[in-house]
Image (tube, rainbow, N blue to C red; front, side, top):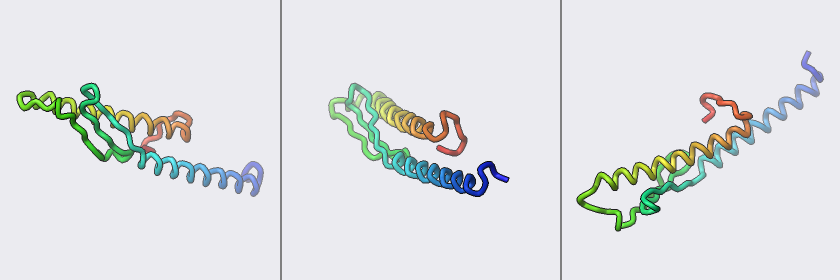
Length: 108
């Protein structure tokens, strides 16, 4: 028999359901989160959402040098990486509230 009997089992099921609902809500909020990454002192700005979809890229015209396209490419990559790192950190921080800091494969 379950400790606490039928009532204890019902309470445990309610707690599990609430935790599942809270987790689903947190996942939805994270998917809608928008972060910005930048590089070149803010001359390149990239926005992505919690699904890692690029929403916008802003390039200050001063950073465009036709003779140094490689630098522009590097700045864009750096801004994208910064934005993705912010999303990952935010996701890990939010999910640790539910997992107690344990890494659970497949959760996110």
